Amino acid sequence: MSAAAPLALPLRPPAHQVSPRAVRWWQLRALLTLVVLTGPQLVVLVLSADDAPGWLVATSVATAVIVLAYGVVVPPLLYRIHRWEVTPEAVYTMSGWLVREWRIAPISRVQTVDTEHGPLQQLLKLASVTVTTASARGPVKIRGLDERGAAELARVLTETTQATPGDAT
Image 1: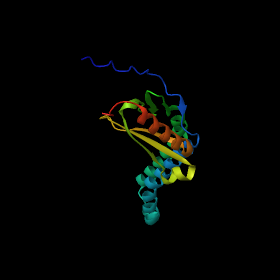
Image 2 (image 1 turned 60 degrees about the vertical axis):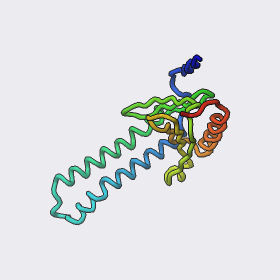
Image 3 (image 1 turned 90 degrees about the vertical axis):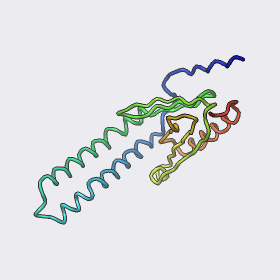
């Protein structure tokens, strides 16, 4: 009895970009990070007023500059890099700006498809789709999709996986 040869999936950049609103989402997340990192420092500076150590002022300013620079520079890069595509054979994703991750998940290995809408995503009408596979590497995530597009993607993936032979293991 011979086993069927595994399907060779082409390694190529995925065709679709995430929603342009994802740039604003990533910027708002950077702004929240700025508040979380500098907020306590600013409280200490205000409470200590005249006795504030110079190093605390320097670290507060450095933190603010770094996080603001990140919020200006990185989100447009993420938008250009984050890509996704679903074909009858596989789910393709590419993400990351510092460490790039390129993933291909064969449709026959898909176990579940989930959508997620965090508070900022809801505000911007965005969603994330998580495709759980029978892989030790973990789920494939597509973040920053238009919420209607994410719902349609989840529907199409569910229908495609149900129609695809295989046991998802």
